[in-house]
Every structure is written in C-alpha cells, then in structure tokens.
Picture 1: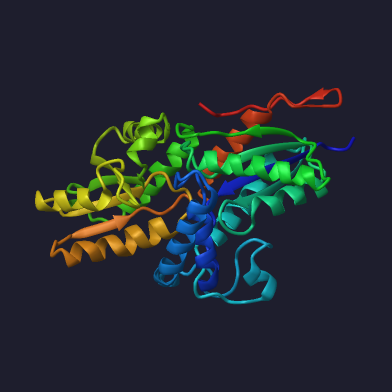
Picture 2 (picture 1 turned 135 degrees about the vertical axis):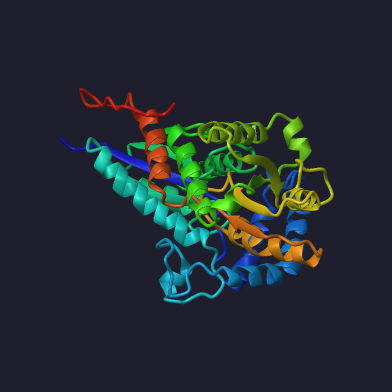
Amino acid sequence: MQKPKLGVVLMNLGGPTSEESVRTFLYNLFSDEDIIKLGGGKAQNTLAKVISKFRYKKIAEKYREINGCPKGCMGSKYCLNRQNKVVSDCCSPINPLTELQRRTLEKTLIAELPQFEVKVYTAMRYWRPFGQQVMEEMIEDKIDHAVLLPLYPHFSWTTTGSSFRDWEDIRKNVLKSGKTPTWKEYTVKSYHLNRPFLESVNSRINEAMERFTDEERKKVHLIFTAHGTPIAEVESGDPYTGQIEETVEAIMDMRNRHENYWLSFQSRVGPSKWTQPNTEDLVTRLLEYGIKHFLMIPVAFVTDHIETLHELGIELPEELEEKGLHVEKLEVSGGLNDHPKFMQALVDEVKFRIEHVESSSVRVELKSTVK
C-alpha cells in the first residue's frame, strides 16, 4: 500500500544572503501591510523603498558581524549563494539555522511517523525560499496532507498571521496559473505552552547559567526579551503579548521561581507607542539600582538571527558602555535552533494536527504529548 504523503511547511521570517539582498529583504519587510499598517498600495511601497534605500548598507554591516555561512552556503537549495557557489560575508544566520531545523525535523518525523512519506519544507516570508516556490514544489511532490508550522511559538498577526495571509495569496495565484494544491491542510497557530518547548527554553537557560560562577549566580537577574509590538496591536486584540507573559510564567514555575526575573521588549521601530519596558531601558534602570549581572533570554525567537546575536549580543553591551554604565557580566542564552526538546515540540504539534488522518481503511492513531 502506498503511504500518504505528508508535507510540513516550516514558516519563518527569512534573512538576506548578501549585501544586495539586504535592500530587497528590507523592502519586502516594510511593504508588508501586516507590519506597517498603511493599507498597502503606492504609499506603502514608497515608504518601503525609502527605508530600504537608506538603511540597507548600515544593516548589511551588522549581518557581516554575525555572518551565518563563513565557509560556504549552509542554507536551503533555493539560496542563490548555494546555486552560484558563492561564499557570502553578509548572510543572516537564520538561513542555515532554519535549514538545520528543517533537516532535523524531517529526520525525526520520518522515524516517528512510519505511516507517512514525510517531507519538510521551509517557506520564508521575506527572502528565499518564498512560499510560491514551496507551494509549487509541494504540488509536484503530490502531497496529500500539509501542516503549516510557523517557527513562531506565539501568535501575532504580524508574524504567523502575515505568513498565513501570504500563503493564501500564493494559493490564489497558483490556482490562476492552472496548478491545483489538492492536499488537506492543517495549521498550527501557536504552541507557547507546549511542554517540550518550555523545557527547551529552560534547558538553554541552564546552559547559559553555567557561564556564571556560583557566587555570580546568586546575583543574576533573568531578563526575558521578546520582539516588541505596537500598543495599537495589543489593543486591537493581538494575543502575542499575553502569550509571551504566559510562557515566561510557565518557565519560572519550572524553575521554582528561584531567580529574579523580568520581561522586556526589543526592536522598537518608529514613533508609535510600543509594549514596555524596552529591553535596553530596563537593563539601564536595573544597573542604576546596582544590579550588575544579567542573563538575556530571547524567549520568542526560536532561531538565532540579527535580533539575538547582534541586537542582544553586540549592540546592547555597546550601548550600555556608551552610556557609561558598568556591567559585571551580561550573557545571552542560546537560541533553541535544533535543541532536541524543541524538535520534539514541533513533532508533537504535527502529530496533534494529523492524529485522526485516515488512509484507505486504516486509521492512523498517533499519540501526542502536547499539553
């Protein structure tokens, strides 16, 4: 009997792979009406062109400092660097790390779901591989069941919502071209309280705490940090901020609330009011109160990229130093990336969505550890 074909689509932000692509990446990002709410159209595109034109060189320098593929392309088969055999000095780490997550998840799902022929794809929102390329590949592969699995544990209309909307727009374009996606589709909207996900974050915290001496650990304050959100988004009902808070409290329950901890928000853009406190502002205030040891925990980012490696690991210490503030020790916990517990969390989410899938006369009964 032929096995049903299961396609799992990992959805992520994406990142540039060269200096030239930084400009296009920024344009794609700021022309997204789910990010900058100007309603799309000419005004939105004009703003995106202006921002990308004047900011891309400065942003490119940051990517150079955290270049993800210093010895050659480790990204997906759709990466132009891989296709052209180019070694980039300006590639976002999110590209090779998401590809690592894709390969690891596919290997794990093949082992855990022998009832299916499994293939895992990656659809990036703002750079290659784009959803259009992925959907067309899935049609060629004759996928029977598809699970859309965002690499965003917390739902926001600006991240998961934007990826889902883009996917639907692509489907309409594909249908117009005469191709037809025939699979049954399932979506994972959030998994911020998935037990293995929480355990993976807690594990990364434990690993990072080992960088402090026994005496220093008594003084460490945990700073959970997530990408900020405009207050207007929160007031409109976006659940992201509330889910972040739930994740933090669940993790601290695991830790028996032994450490002092705080929640802050980073990557603030523009003049509008954003969720508070801002990460840099919070650390500054704590330093002024005499606290000198910090562990920064990027709780909403599951793949290391510019917000974790550069914004927290490089920019934050530099900005504090420029203010004349002295930090005894500031560490950043590692991204989840291919942590075994995080991979299990993703497997659980897939299993939960397809546990009642039927193939011929045989019902596939799958146990899930999702809580």
